[in-house]
Image (cartoon, rainbow, N blue to C red; front, side):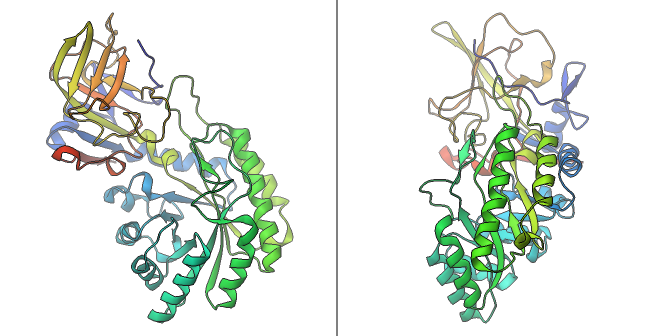
Length: 410
């Protein structure tokens, strides 16, 4: 038997049925028409936003990194609740604009931006976070060609990383951003070329559950932004401090304690150097805002025994939930939290069950030897933490199975 991560707080059952946003899981499947189904509870997202606002300094803007979940109804609801969208492709630029976010509140990061993507962003007035000197040259040339002044920020590869980060995005050789020792010179060149310089984007890492590490990284980010700005000789309009806030996924994980982060950040900003006194600041978050608000519901189509091990075969799989299968950024596969939605709260069986998907590959394993109530054909399996990096981050075209249904509550 292998342990699972903790089910996010607040999920309850009624007469043995898991409730999501106050609605029974089975009724949500009926409403959507079939399984597999992603359900997103907007009320939980709004509670996370409120938690951020309560804990962080009022001067710090909240941006949503839409790569976590770009479901169109969710994006539309996010407009007006967050202060900006961070995107990472030309397609996401269009999604953000279609959702109604103002162009001057959209920032576009990511390596390998094509000229046509740069053109779309510049034409709309979206801020481009430059990843290299070459990208700066191309963005300026595109702006001149279309007769539009580009809005350009510099993404910095910092000379430090975020300790304990699930994915380290800064420090050392990286495909992301301009090395810190060259960033000021590039900012100066952008300004001299006549572009509108929008500031710094400094992202050191993601999926971190260590408040002390995040406090240290934010202080280092502010110090780096000040040092670079002094070298440029211009106050940056915006300093994007990155994100890094994680959520518990696996056994032993504890929720991130963010009030100490907010208190330390307020002190750091109060004491910031004069060159940053006129700057705005932002934190960009994805998984932390939406991850716990999503549940993936998939139906058991077969239960079988093999060599003394029991398998529950479901109609979903890694083509919808790559992360839960352990094939999205994890080195050692561990179990996401899951439950039998129509037996929620029932005692677990004596023997574990392995939950596998419908794909013809041995890596399509959603739960490895987990303790669940007795599983039967027709049961609904609920996989939690499905609000981020689920439907849009999984190989949905693999083997030709249909896309999962999606439903936003609230």
